[in-house]
Image (cartoon, rainbow, N blue to C red; front, side, top):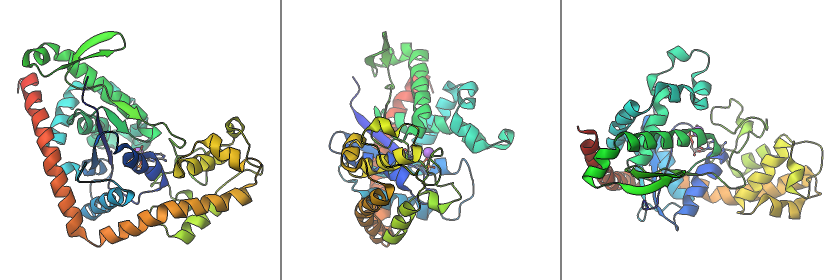
Length: 350
Ligand code: ADP
Ligand code: NA
């Protein structure tokens, strides 16, 4: 068995929104008492879609501030930025040679982000999942808390780990650094673990407040579609008041949310923000109109997000402190990554 280890990351692009908070940050915090955690600001990922940014460093600091403000402990755990540990990029290169082009071409996020002019997307955007696999596996991490949109990338991470383990089976045995695991019914002497995504919960994919068929996203042109972590209380309340809903009352059972994506989304958000299940929320609010439910949701959202927002602002005013956290984290992450890469060199024969 591999030692349980959490790894996850967030890109330093644009404002964090409620989807990032519920799909990632809030889960990161909850996992801290259960396992060792490594949380990264993945700055190398943010140049895949757009190379030139005028404020990458300050964006990195503000994601770090969001991590700390949400309650992540950078002393017990590790918080750092990706580009400070060059082993991520090095392992990604090796994984580029393990992974197949066909695997990358099938990624729905690549298709979405590349758009129609796919030939003109950056090679980095195509290889993005290979870097993501390296981020995780350079720490031989076993569990990755993410939103539902990252599921396909984590399957690819498993494919890369499996191919590496099988291609180098003999060498892994020889250097004595492998771990016996079973994949399906197949016994494998593995150097890299088969990562498990941690996606479950009442809001694995937070949807747009304006269109229940689209995920809440920082690239949505409508600001009313998302709640930003930096929105003040009035803005949060206004966006929830203006959220799209249907004319019916809330059902009293989860089954009654089927075919009602906007209602399902708001109930899921309520449940996730209060650490309850959707069934539990509906046992309280079932039968009520949205005109009653929305103010309760707005109050809850403000109560949860305001302290995070305030602490984020306080931290952003102290960039030296944030930089010190990142430096300490990257030194500790780097020490682990260096050990892994020493073994990888030996396995690959470099
Ligand atoms: P984005 O997807 O907003 O561009 P990232 O790719 O950096 O941001 O994602 C950071 C984390 O937030 C990932 O774990 C991702 O799965 C999660 N996430 C992003 N959007 C949502 C959403 N609408 N619902 C749930 N989780 C989300
Ligand atoms: Na994403």
